[in-house]
Image (cartoon, rainbow, N blue to C red; front, side, top):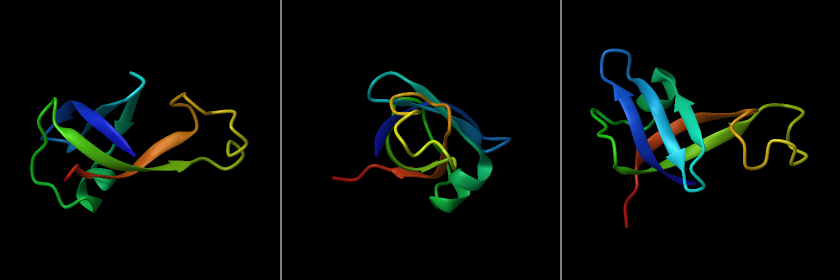
Amino acid sequence: MQATAYTYDDATRSGSVLLDDGTPLPFDAAAFDAGGLRLLRPGQRVRIEVETAAGTGDGAAEGRAEGRRIVLITLQTL
């Protein structure tokens, strides 16, 4: 899935992205580290992998941030 970097704190290696529908979704240091990045700037296009919490796979969380968490964030490449 693609998104746009929205915020990033280099001290905590966490931040948030904006999904293409404008929904913000936070990421933690584990997701940042999994992508092998050293720095992230707001506005950069990124590729994310999202894990859906158990029990929300029926579409109940479709289009919303609830029940989803980013497990990997890396730069989008062409």
